[in-house]
Amino acid sequence: MSETTSAGRQGPAMGRRERKKAATRRSLADAALELFLEHGFDQVSIRDIAEAADVSTTTLFKHFPSKEALLFDMDADVEQALVAAVREREPGTPLLTALRTHMLGARAVKAEYGEQIAAFERLVNSTPALVEYHRRMWMRHERALTEAIAADTGAPADDPVCAALAHLALEARALAGGAADPEAAVNAAFDLLERGWEAARPDAGRAS
Image: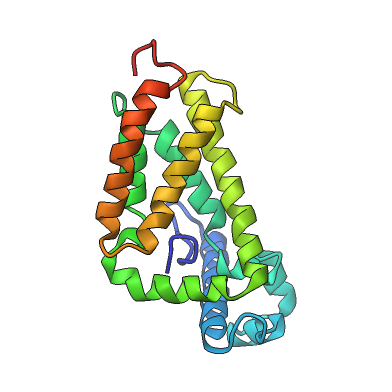
C-alpha cells in the first residue's frame, strides 16, 4: 500500500495499552482495505468491517471517525513525517536534499509495492467520496509542509514561494506512482526543483 494505507507504527516505548490500541487499529484498517478491494468501497458497511476485525462498531468509531478514514489510516503519521523531514533534518543538510530523501522513501517509489499501489489508486479514483477525502487530506499535508518550509526560511506562513515548493514536492511523489521508474521520476522532479528553489527561495540572500 501507499504510505497512507500501511499499518500503524509501534514505538519502542509504547506501553501495553498503546500496543493493544495500535493492534486494533491495524486490524481494522487491514480488514477494511481487504473488503474494499474485494467488494468496492460503497458496498462495504461499517458493520461489515467491525465484524471482520471482530470488534464492535463502537470500538471502530473510537479509532476512526469515518469509513473513508479507515483507508487512509496513516494520514496523521504521513503529515508528521513530512514536517519532520524539514524541521528535524541533520544540521547542514539542504532543505531540498532532505525532502528528496524523504520522498524517495515513500512506498509509492518502491517497485515491490507497485501492484498494491495501483490497486489502491484504482479504488480511490473510482469512488467519489474517496477522491474528495484524499483531496482534503492532500491539502492539509500541503499546508503543513508549506508552514514548515516557511518557518525554516524565516518567511511568512503563507509565502507563495514556500507554498509552491510544498505543492510541487508532493506532486513529485504523486508523479512516481504512475512512472515506469518511480525513483527516476522523483529525482528528475527534484533536480528541477533545486534549480528553481535556489533562485526563488525567500532567504536567497542568506546562507542555507
